[in-house]
Image: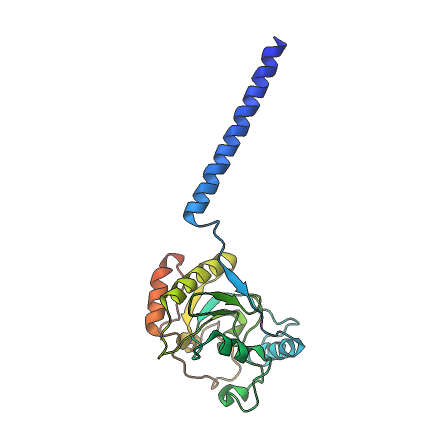
Length: 238
C-alpha cells in the first residue's frame, strides 16, 4: 500500500515537472515568434560626457528650459528623428565628441549656449545603431524639447537620402525605446516648432528657433507607417 502511494506521488510530481517545462517551452516559443525576446543590437560608442558637458547641460536646462536640477538627465516622452547633413559616421561622431561648440561654429545657436550639439543615438548608413550616451542623459538636439526628447541622428542629408537599412533600424529603435519608456510622441526635427504654445514647449526666448528639414517628409511618412501600431502622436496640427 505504502509503495503504491510513493509511486503515485512520484508519478504526479513527474507529470507536474513535465507540464511546467512544456508550458515554459511554449511560452518561450511564443515570445520568440512574436519578437519579445529579441534584443535589439546596439553598439555603445560614447562621446565625451565630461564635467564640462555636465555643467553646460545643467545650465542649459535652467537657462533655456527653465528647469533647475542637479543632474543632466531627462524623462523621455518623445523621440525626434534627424539626419546629420554629413556623409560619414566618423565625421558626425567627431563633431559631437567635443563638449563645447568649436569657436566660430554654429553662430545661430552659439549665441544662447556654448554647449555642443549631440544626440543619444546615431545610426550609420548600414543600419548600425550607435548609442552615444545613456538614453536619459541630456543632449542638445532640438530647441524647446531637449528636456523630454531622445534624439536619433541618421547619417545622410537631402542629397544623400537615408537608406532602407536606416529605416529598419529606426523602427527597431523606436519599438525598443517605446517599451523602455513612456514615449508619447514621434516627430521629425522639421516639426519641432509646431509644439510652440503647448505645455511641452520650454524655451525661455520666444524668438529662438532655426529652420530644419530633416529627416525629410518621405522618411517620416514611411517610419510612421511602419510603427503605426504603437499609436505614437505626431506634432500638433498648426
